[in-house]
Length: 410
Image (spheres, rainbow, N blue to C red):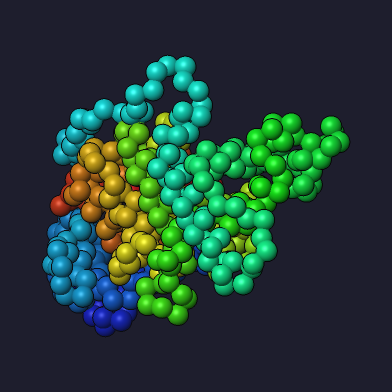
């Protein structure tokens, strides 16, 4: 047997070999440019044996099982991940992979009879109590504005009945479907423009008055921008909280779920507006969404407002935090969650599995804790693949597959 050759490298050189940046980091579309970067600067990863790398000749290959690679995870020297290992092998053992059958019922949850009017389904989510809250807050805001601006001669009359708010919302829904150049055109006498249903529902002047003071939140509880704990979404948060609860209440999700971002088109002046050129709307408010893959039902959501939004931040990255936040509402285990490479990481997949949820996602080859030499595999033909299995957690697998270029899945 030939003599082994050893090359002792410094810790900096080891980190550069294992986790050095590649051009694949830049493969994220420009829509991600405004997202907070994944902060993993405090994480450290080391080879579990010693801080050195052995270079073996072909004759020595039988002395070492080179299909096994071991990476220790240490995060700030504390937490459940300290001294835990993620080791990979190319010897796949499917008998060690366990997938439990789901034990939950799925589908809509309500007592409405078959053939119910669409408005009845709408009121499952936008309830009468929510509408009453809007009525009260609208009157409070009108009183506040008139007092602030010293308005003494006003045509405004408080909204006395919740039915008037329902009428106002009905007009807004009709306007969103039948678009006209100007809002006043809906009340035009010209039959080519005027909308008879809107005219019968509410007068133009009354609609404009309610629109001016329409308010979802309690003005007395709102904070100024300089106050501690100020939230840019404070005027929407109470309403969204009720809406989320109703989303959860009236639907039990199927096994397959999907998480991604959506964009609500908006071109006004707002600090949280995002520019995403790959989206149809391109500019608007980004919203993280957990949806049922079968029906497209939105089960949970959260607007993205930067570092001060409602998603708790950790050192594991924004993608990790968003997934764990959205999935915290799941009442049952055994779901299979799909997401893209912005969210994916080995730690996320492992932690979801430990929480009883399965997941699948594409992943960038420069993510931490992947098989050490995964970037060295050069698959030649389309359809060719290479698989790895985690030794400590056999359900955790990684596959690199050749399409036009190598694509990795975890």
